[in-house]
Length: 240
Image 1 (tube, rainbow, N blue to C red):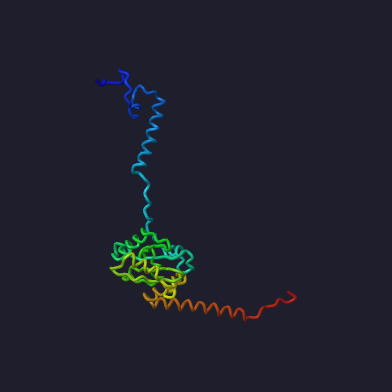
Image 2 (tube, one colour):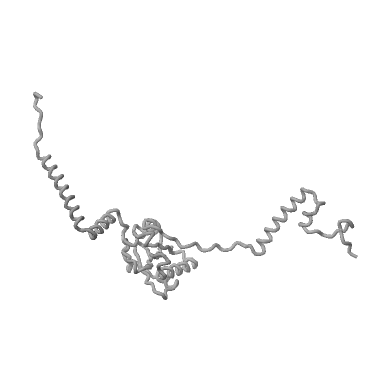
């Protein structure tokens, strides 16, 4: 018959590694060595069974937060040496259902991995109103989807039946001769003129008065300069 306890009867029944580590008869040094071997064996087993590395998830869509950032990344107007770009100009997704729809289509394209062009979005109401002014976008017309290639822009016309495949077709079928010129980046002078026009529309009398005063000062300075240049110079005499 089988003896109940091999510890006292000297049998050669095999013990598990864990039981050997827990046994009070196992010396301290082999116990730590066995624990190390168990950890290595456990990691190797998990990797072999089902803990294999997965393919990395597709990167999220790029968001531009200013017109300067958009132009720096795409070089849409300045040269475009960084390849083709598909850019969606949107409002906040909670205010624009169609913007959210286009964003999801672009995520589908991102997962399909098309390396011959890059994709990005730019929110034009809060993040980058300068972009809206540069391209002349009106609030009620969003979203806009454009392909930028070789310093030209091509509009992809959107509707509720739009699919990722149709967007891809728009990117690949865009021809240079059909593209529009990309608007140049707005300068400080453009912003100054815009502020002046806004003030003029709000209070034209004040603006015209300010312009008149400024013009009067300029004429006064010019007249004073002309008189100073026309006056004869006093040559000091030898006696002095």
